[in-house]
Each structure stands twice: as C-alpha cells, then as structure tokens.
Length: 321
Length: 113
Image (cartoon, rainbow over all chains, first blue to last red):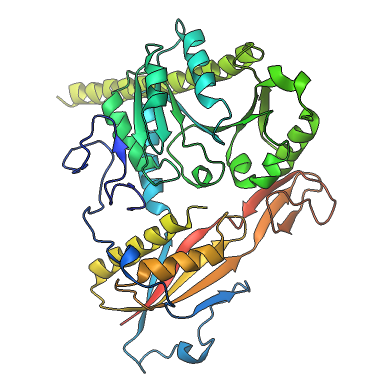
C-alpha cells in the first residue's frame, strides 16, 4: 500500500472514484508522488533477516564507527553519506497543509472524529446534523475499511457525505481526504466532519488538515482508555464522553476517566454527551458553531485584506498613470 | 501503530532520494524515532525487513536512534524527561506535563554507494 495515498494496491475506494483509481484527475493539492511504483517485495520474499538493526540509546551523538561493518571512513570506500532529515510522515503533512489551506480559504471548519469502533460516532453525527440543519451547512467524510453503510446513514439526513473505504488501511490520511474534498465540492463557510476509521491508535499520527481532532469515548468502554491509548488522547483537543445516559447502569467513574485523560493531555477539553437523550448536545453544538464562526471570520478577514490590497494597488496605478 | 505505513514511507523517501541523486545502493538507513512518537521500534524494524527487500536499500543496515521524551511541567515550570505521555513530572509528581520533545519520526541520513 502506498503510505500517503493507500491506493497502491487498489484497496482504497473513494465513492465516485473508479475502482482502479487511476489518478489521472487534477486536484488542488499538489500531487508529486508517482503511482504504480512497484512494491512487489511486499509478500514475495521470505521474511528473513535484512541486515543488522542497531537500537541506539540516545546520547545526542552521531554514531559513526559503531560495529565492525560500520567504520565511517570517507575516501576508503565508495560509500558516502546523504543527509535526509525528512519527516517520515512528511508527504502526508504536505497534503494536510494543502487541505488546511483549502479550508482556510473557504472558511471551512473541519473536525476529525476519532474513537474505537462502537463509541457512537455515527449516531452522534446524525443527531448533530439534524440539530444543526437550520444553522450550518454540514458535510461528512466517512472512513471505514469497507461498506458505505455509514455514508448512507448520513445521506439519509440530507447532508452530503462521501465514503472512503481504506481497504486494509487502518486510518484516513490527508491525501484520501483531499480526494474526498474534490468530490464534495463544499460551499464556503461549511462545517466538515471527518469520521475516521474506528481505531484508537493509528489515526492519531495522521494530520488531515483539520482544525481539531475530537476523540469520542463512550461510557460503555473502560475509563482507563486514555492511559491505554495515550497517543490519541494526546493528539485530540476535545474529548466527548458519549452515552452518558447509560451511566446509572454502569460502574464507570467519570471523574477518574477525566483525570486519566488530563494526565495524558492537560489541555484536553471534555464534554459529557448523550446522542440518545440529547444531554450535553447543546454544549457540543455550541463548540462546533464557535469554531465555524472563527473559520468564517478568518476567511472574511482575508477577503477584506485582499480587497484593501487591491484598492491600494489600483490607487498606485492611478497615481502612476 | 501503522508501522507498515511508516516503513513504506521510509522506502518512499529512500527511493525518491535515489532517483534525485542517482545512487545505486543504500547500505545504511538511519532513523530518529522519539520516545513519545507512538512508534513500536521492534515492529518498525520487522516491517522494514520486509519492505526494503528488493529495493535499492535491500539488506541495508537500519539504525534506529531513540530520542528521549521531553515535557514542560505546568506544575513546577521545568522541562523534564518523560518516557510516556501519561508519566508524572519526575520532579514534582504533577501530571500536568505537556510533551515538548520526543515525538519525532525522521529519516536522518543514508549511507550510499
């Protein structure tokens, strides 16, 4: 699988894209990687050794000359060192920056909803869309390994939705979201909800260009999940404690859960919500609308700045002429 | 997490650099992986084993350098070393520690022929 796109093996499907996913389309984010690069080594080889792997304790030093085959003596062999200094997720981050720029230019407030499978993300989304109908234009990108069931549920509310099937992939990446954006063709000042693949581990590392990651934890799960899956709770800005209508029937200690979450991420905001009883929905919707308001204001400010700049240039031209 | 994706990302960086600079073989790949990056280094080296086979970096040595986790403690106002995101401050015991370093996942350099 191509890391950035996930499409190398034809596994990723974005609704409306051809199954074969030929990548002959144009889209706004730059797209430097070549497709069709062969990863034929993936399964065709026995999984033997591939040379030594050295784990080094950090000393802040360069470790030339450790080990027998390791002598770094320029001039004595044909070996030379090529400095790379590149982030392994650099390509994903480039696509994420492209998405973020697109969102900023169009006043779009994008949130990335992450959780375990079964935390109630889709139900929360459906309820949120219904309650926001009069107040905002909402669109959804749905990530799942397979099926378009979730996008179908969203579309039943009347909101536009695109399903991205990641195939064997365990997370959405910024490139997939870029493709979905082309399909959605969002109007300015929209709210975009990206429902990531249900997985509390991998989506933490992949920036999609969103304004915030929102982690959803339901009270039917363990209250120590923030400690068990710290990366996700660390990457999020808001935690929604969902299904709180069930608390009377469970031994879930809310205070302890919030304490664990704050150990991992002291700045994490927490909202207690039930998409079934509507408890806490107002606070959640207010949080979304506040973010959307800021995105819209930033866009208008940009437009104003541009208009002023144009006026200045026109004035200069007139004076010059 | 997603170590296979990371291994593929590393291969892509190596192959892109090989195409730009025209070297034929990579003998060593050096990585910097922060303690708070969420990467399981054993899993990553296993995946690299598989992914690098048949590539320009076939049988290259892989060196994984672990960078320490660092955080700023809101409790005592000091920068401290931590090994996990949920670790308390080793100085004052507060859990109000913001990660400030050790989240890196980088390809540092290559030895090539």
